[in-house]
Image 1 (spheres, rainbow, N blue to C red):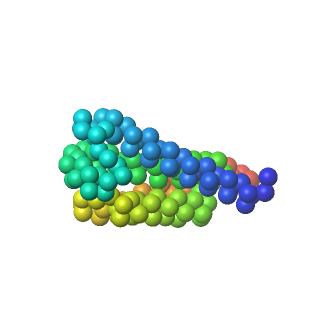
Image 2 (cartoon, rainbow, N blue to C red):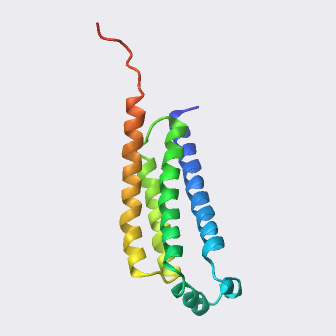
Length: 149
């Protein structure tokens, strides 16, 4: 398989893993921290959704931050593991997609200002940190072609 095709497929798998991790962790947060009135909220009504979001506990927002960070890191890690190296494509694309979807989420639903600032700073930092850690790991496991005498 051509290297470029392998990288593109790994990137797609990494994005799918990123989305899946975020969805799973946010669903877990909803199960653990949702109030009894959560099921009665009309999600089609922006006013009702806004009122519900304003009454969520801080722990629910922290779980969402955890989901966004874990999804970013997992997506980059899976894509890199599939091609056995960190491509220059993976970190900016997966981190950028996660950041853009998070910012879009801020426009759709009301979020506390501290969460928005933290997310906009945290997601790129996690992406960069994950890329650096993985590149060090992949570079340290390379075996030299020739052993010096």
